Image 1 (cartoon, helix red, strand yellow):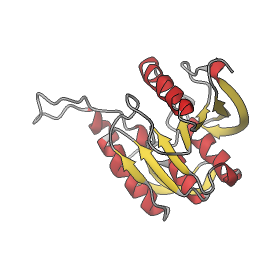
Image 2 (image 1 turned 90 degrees about the vertical axis):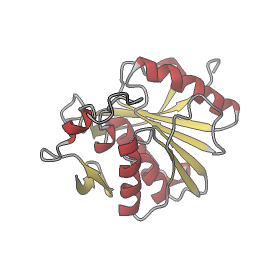
Image 3 (image 1 turned 90 degrees about the horizontal axis):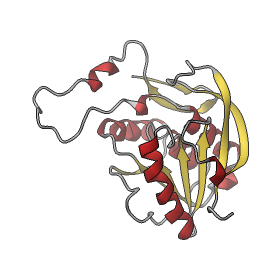
Length: 211
């Protein structure tokens, strides 16, 4: 992995994949763990995906969004969004990430950017939200099964008085009727099907179903 500035976010550096990273090995089953309870996870944390990038850019451009607030970075991956929130003046940043390699990368990335991020290394979407003021959810609607878990969790956040912002380039399972567009940027979808090309990606407020 190479520590490098994030495209469209030169304020932040991440350990990101490159052709010599050998990350394909992470998708191979562990021969010594025939009965492993978990399947190998794609290294999503090794890339700055468009949803996270647009949300991070929005937060850095509008620091009042997070300044002095307790923030949850949901499905944090590399930690890009949480790092941006910390740099923009958040009082506390919690990052929720379930991938064990991602948790390690997240800690390294936070340290590389000189910010403090607390990490929850488990799926929190089945339970109540943590004690935060704002949830930042970048690129969490990439699969139907994930969206079905995330939406009820975000509803519980709203019910608890927690503001929710979503960053997404328009993936298939984005709950568009529940979103209100706040801003749009052209950011590369690094590591995604876009091949790194810049594409319009939005930052949305997640709103109640009756709104």
